[in-house]
Length: 139
Image (cartoon, rainbow, N blue to C red; front, top):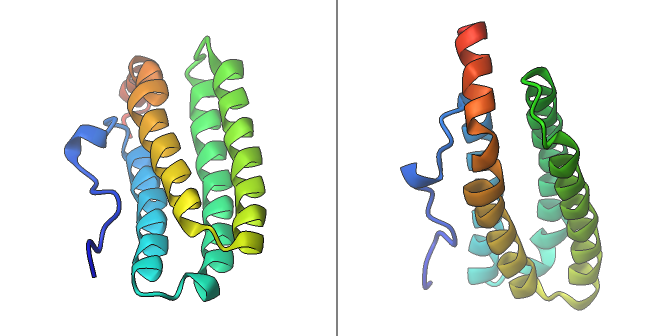
């Protein structure tokens, strides 16, 4: 087996918002689980349930993030929601395509690039708004 983890989570990926960081770690963990099964030759039996789990957990994460952003009066909320909708749509299509063609490497590459890019670029744009909210609420 080459590498057990496809994406190694590091402190550089943390945003400093505990619930968001934990959910991001959960999403990365699910992607790593898919990678593990691909490496062990079991992707055909695991890709559908893993993608379903990822879609559902992503929905929970987006609802959490969007609710916090709305409460924090994040000015780019609508744009951020549009990004979320686009990912959900692309992930669903990719999941269907992957199940048909069994192209799990394509799925992994997309998920890694999208999630790390989103966390480390787009999500960083709202940190100051959520930190103010956290200070007010004293999470």
